[in-house]
Amino acid sequence: MLKPTEGRAAPESLPPAFVESFLGRSLDPRRDAFTREVLEGMRPVVCVDAETDPRADKELVRTLVFRSILAVPLVVRKRLLGMAMVSTFDESFAFSEEQIELARGIANAVALTVENVRFYQMEQERQEQLQTLLDVATAASSSLDLDEMLRATLDRLVVLVAYASKRGATAEITSRVDQALRRGS
Image (cartoon, rainbow, N blue to C red; front, side, top):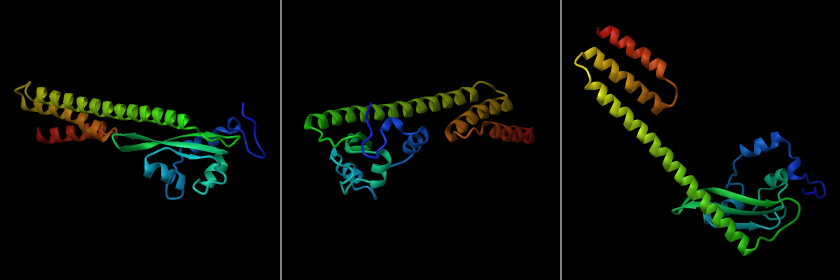
């Protein structure tokens, strides 16, 4: 367990509300030269004493009781995805080259994993959309009764539209389709 130093709170003593507010907060590179240096340079940056380093966001350093910080970019194919930070809370710490390279390696693996998950999700969505379109084509060719064919096709299109909009508009769209079909009958 880390011990507090001169008026500084130990990290494990931070209230849950604080942790939640931190998780929802984004670092602003316009105000934080340290973050800007990591993001623009796309390379690891070390801050041995965050309280005195002019690059560090002093509000963030005081709030999170940071002492030393190692920040590494998450980069895939020369594209920046984000940034990871390692920090100490009680004493200043000079990160070694080995530690920096280890953090860089971990960040690269995380960035690649994030990118792969994103591609996987995009492919899953594409597959679902293609399946819906196949269902629409099947419905359109399954009946000689025009009303039945239109109803089956529109049902499947409603699913596709609702999926694409992700707003749960299925009920409203279905209602409008029913009204249109009644008017056309």
